[in-house]
Length: 253
Image 1 (cartoon, rainbow, N blue to C red):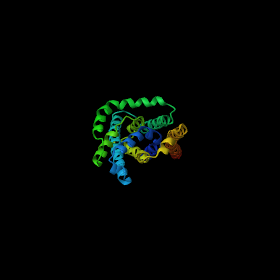
Image 2 (image 1 turned 90 degrees about the vertical axis):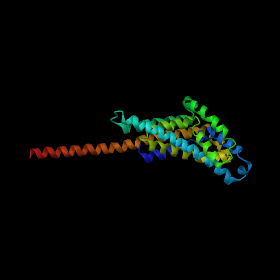
Image 3 (image 1 turned 180 degrees about the vertical axis):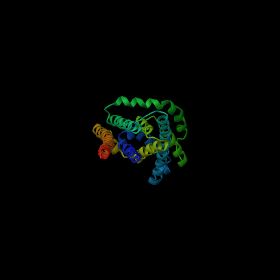
Image 4 (image 1 turned 60 degrees about the horizontal axis):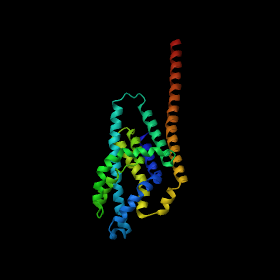
């Protein structure tokens, strides 16, 4: 999967994850908004600034995690003899996209068990976050966001596995940053309170349509590079055959 395509796909996944993010983090951002001083809550511009600070911290944590797994994946690939490395990475990324689609649609709820992976780390970080409440300054909001980014979340973990196949620490960080930016609109809206959007995203039909869309995107991501590669392979074969025929005619002459 080429870098620009992967980053765009990660951003789109973030947008599609609205159905999960509002259920997972919408309540958190709402509670944090209510914990702000009244002078902040009563001023829409200040409220938006605090909510944005929360989310900047969260996205920075996503990016740092993506950098770590991207580095690990690149190092593992460097020390592993993979004759068809790019294809392996692309197929792995597509499998993860399909898993994300099944997860969002609710067709494979067992995948939610992956959230247990991050619980030990969260038990260490959560008390630190509690000490920051009430969040009455922008530095506190940013710091809380940095901690919030490590909240156990199956959706984040699926995208992290995808970032693992990105090929480098930089690409892994960019993948997770793009995903985080894709989630930003829904969580900013949740912070300003859009209850109708929450009701919409809780609809089973909405979840299934979003999940099916992600799976379709995964299939398209797989087929387009293969088709391109196939055309080049066909042209290369024709070139080899033509060269061989010319060589044979030259020998005969």
